[in-house]
Length: 233
Length: 233
DNA sequence: CGGGATCCCAAGCGATACTG
DNA sequence: CAGTATCGCTTGGGATCCCG
Image (cartoon, rainbow over all chains, first blue to last red; front, side, top):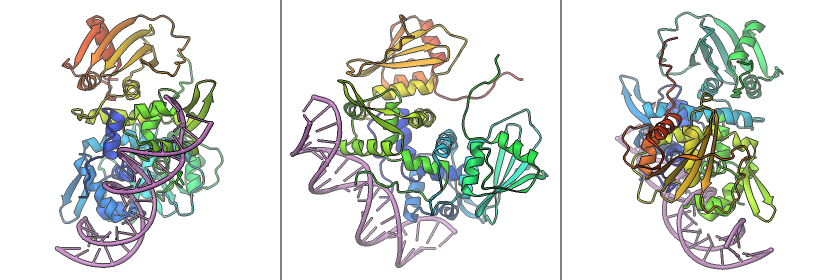
């Protein structure tokens, strides 16, 4: 009996119910990765290097039963897992966790790496919509082995993995030809510093792009949710 | 060895780190209750009726080690646990969970009850700041055995438990004499319906207050984060 | 009586091996 | 590729006990 009957907390309330549904170990990390798009079992396992296969299997079953994840057979591409509407509604939860967690992060542990979907999730959490800058801008970030391409356009953000992903990207037709304005190579601490808005640029290497592009990126991606409104009135 | 060394996820990222710190079973419910104010061990145990005492003890130790909770001896009042600044920064996480969870809630289970701090947390998550209504308004909500008094004033929200709490409330000096404009008695489903903005008033009993006060309450407390902006430009 | 610590059992987790 | 099966270990659950 892999799918356990949700050991409850005995409370009628939102937080308790949410934690019953997605509070098991690894569950929200699966959701985080699926927020980047549909993934095959193997993709998920690759993005969660330390998850035991039986646990991934259990979590996917439980998330399906909770109405968060759906199994979708794809023509000649096998089988993918994707979020349901309710699953996508978990984005604010993941974002809140990202913001808090990045503020707590120090040095990376020896065996800690930045994963592709984790990087994408971080960028989504750090993104600040700004309708006043509607022109699309594309940035490529590399952290260790992983890389993503980030395209911003006004309030819109698109993060796509780069690399030997077998999964065909939807390749939004509305994001046609945008030149890459900035390409960065970061180490984990550099990524943290960048998203924290720290002035120090250790661990941040600009591969291509001018300083203005870097400054613009820093302005649009910042982790803390400082909701001060600066000017009066 | 009560305090385990944070079985990590092997990832350098915000969500992973956050879940390492506060992702253990019961941990975020402890945080939720502490967001309502400092609590003694016994208060926490009473608010989390199904938590085994050893687990509560373990969680509190882990949360202290994670820098989320602090133990504070109080003159002739024993010992309380309270959130640190980092712990208070978890409020957005709890709020996001509340919002998602209330949207998922159906019927209460047989042994599920609404707890006082859970009710307070739900109200905080549902509150919509509105600076244009600065006059303080006080509402009393009862759900089963628990009751809270909610005072709103513009962007400000204050939720205090009512009942035989041993713990002395700070009793904010800035909230002097406000008459109770509305008093409601709800069953769990009525609370859910109220916060969901459902028109149906089953399970919602008005003890005192006029229909206008109820309508005003419904306008200021609504769970879904509908961020549509209705009118054009 | 508040604030835990201890014990024992069951259930969940982790690693590896194996299968359709 | 996409899981299932098995097994030992670790946690959680529930009850009891201890200490100031």
